[in-house]
Length: 93
Image (cartoon, rainbow, N blue to C red):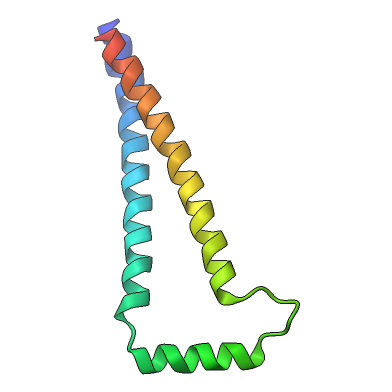
């Protein structure tokens, strides 16, 4: 059982762990980019977006919200996968 754990479960768990870390870093970078920009530039972009947006097109806020929701769902799937791998690894040890 230790051999199966060492050769099969632990490498997979490590790979999933690094994948989850990479996703978190990307999400943190996106958050920093929105706060790092100057308020005047943000206001100018919002004004330009408001004047060019058609009623049928989704607002930039809605697109961002949908993107964040997809990232959250993907993170929850990866976290659940990591939890299962760690649980199985603990059982075999």
